[in-house]
Length: 362
Image (tube, rainbow, N blue to C red; front, top):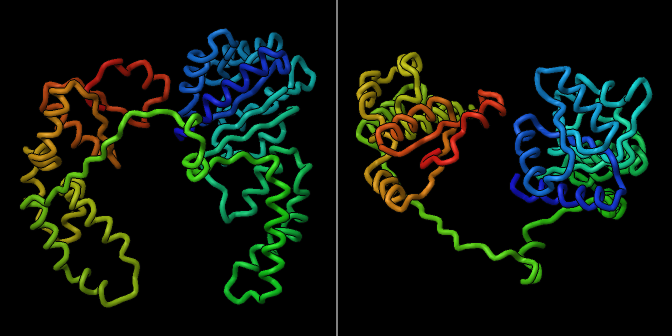
């Protein structure tokens, strides 16, 4: 995300519609992005007809689909809607309907139902690089080129996937490595005309006239230390018999590392049941109950927060869990700043309706 794919596609479609090269486009996006796409269309191409095929109202979805198929425009829908309504999207008044363009955002989520939608052209967008999984790469190009580029999955596996995968193995012979390298080069030559990928190196070496002028960005790293309560509980955990036993075995320590991470963030991230099972002192974690703001942010962080308020800056506080979000909300509530809590539970429409335009902390 944040690579500029949305604006590039909107600009491309604007030119195609102005030149009357296309009439109908179906755009499939993740549910969380549908509002952002429609908002960007309204911002950059206010005259373009853009309708949503999404939401609980079947009659509204049908009207929007009918308008786009009959009068032209862009229909924005989601992968779930595509999965459950592909037959409706592929027909119009009882006859098969062929879209001029079918565009998939976050295309690595493509599903088989998408292949059933007739379309003259297909465009796939993704910020997730396809690296070592050749089968996933084949699926993307097979969908984009409608089976005309890399052959069937069986043929691709025999001609490309097997020799390339074999060449990467440690016991591959020089002949197998040479064959794998040659087939990899051949594969890149085939997909190159259909594959546009901009890497950081390409952008950094671009001509200065093409590089946007951005304001200076400052990264300030603030080292924080465990509070007395956190350090005490942390040491209690390290002294447990199960931790000592773990150090003497080859078992994975990921579960224990996760607990240590929570203790470093805030003792209250561990439930009372978890503390009891681990044999830790629950009362110490409970002591932080009434002063959660000071447990989350030490004096340095609070000074930075106050400085941001004086400068009338807007701040973003990111939490990795809902409980951590509640602790951050407790700190924000202790100030006079206007704050907004945003999470993934409410539907996108509800989040958009309840979001104020001016907030100091998010």
